[in-house]
Length: 329
Image 1 (cartoon, rainbow, N blue to C red):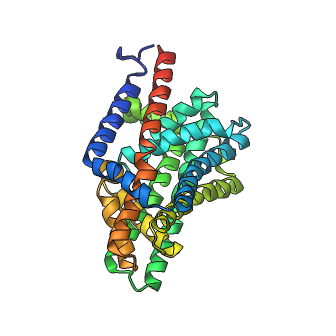
Image 2 (image 1 turned 120 degrees about the horizontal axis):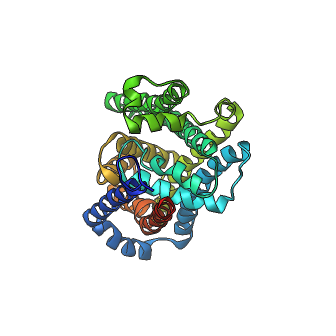
Image 3 (image 1 turned 90 degrees about the vertical axis):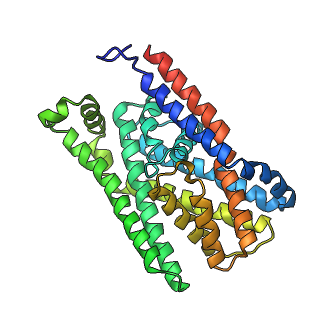
């Protein structure tokens, strides 16, 4: 099957996957030292705490998938959690590999849900509601982080400004998505109708059913599921530091993860290369964690959350894109 210009319908998927692979390979080469040094850290780590860190990371995929399952169940098209966890791995992989404020994985989410038999309207609703829940939880935790820094007398004007900019982004992205949906339900301006991509985007987001988007209880549940992802990431860093013999407070790890995540979200660098590590290490050290332990714990955290899932994420994404490409022929 081809579009009106004669291009294969699945061509964009191949290009998208190619961009993801290039970004992932560049990141791997640039930070290969982190991956090779992980073996040394493993020998030094306490196995019990390391196992807890891995369990926390597995729970992030389960939490994301659980949020989608809430929407799909409300839409009358429930799916198994295992199916959704596979999609969650590819989404989180794409979110980290590609910049754009964590939006990379959303490009493929609807396509993947459609691939497992979910109606387009329900798939779009899962995307929009999950996006709203994600940024609602993210914004809430950003404010909590700022309050905790204020309590520790480290809430500088620069940090407050950074959080303010992020809050604007956190409101703007889901707000834009809902605005597009509203516009998509009406006849678009003539200039938009002439732009195929823009017209298709409006048509797609307009298919999300009103009754799902107006279900406040559903939104609260999805927001809670997304909140658990942030808490699990903070728990992962906490367990990594404890595995290396350091005893930080959970709030210290929470501040470091949220602060580093905000910097990565606002930045244009794929994988947050360097920016996450520097921000997390500096924040931990500022809050009393020895520099060497802060850097080692952050490096272990990044290996568990990014580098180890890189291969399965790439393989699963390639499999999904290949399947969809074949179906589009």
